[in-house]
Image (cartoon, rainbow, N blue to C red):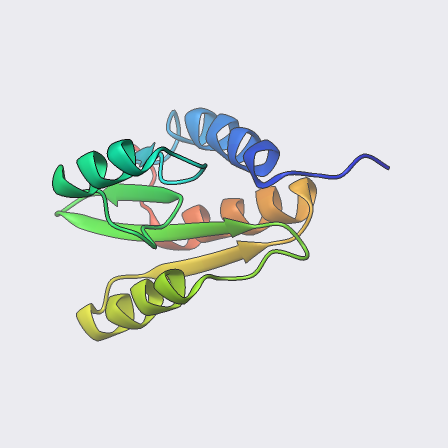
Length: 122
C-alpha cells in the first residue's frame, strides 16, 4: 500500500470537520507549521509569532473554549516542541489530543472528540 502522509490525514480530518461544523458549534483552523523553509523565511515567520510545536488543528467552541489536536501517522512521533506544547496545555487546562493512526482511525477518533466535547447547534 502507498505510504500515508500526515498531510493526507490532515486533509481528511479538515473535510470531516467542515462537515461536522454544520451540526456542532465550532470553528477550526490549521497553523501551517510544517515543511522545510529557508533560514530567512523561518526567522521571519518566527518573528511574526509562529511557534514551533503548535498543534495541527485548533478548534474553538462556545464560551471562548479551545482544544488542540495533533495528528500523527501510525509511525509518527511527537517532536520535543510538540511534547512541550502538550505539557503546557495540561498546565493551562486546555484540552489537547494526539490523534494517531491511519486515515480511518484518525477520522473516527476526531469524530469522537468533537461529539464528546462540542455542543450541537440548536
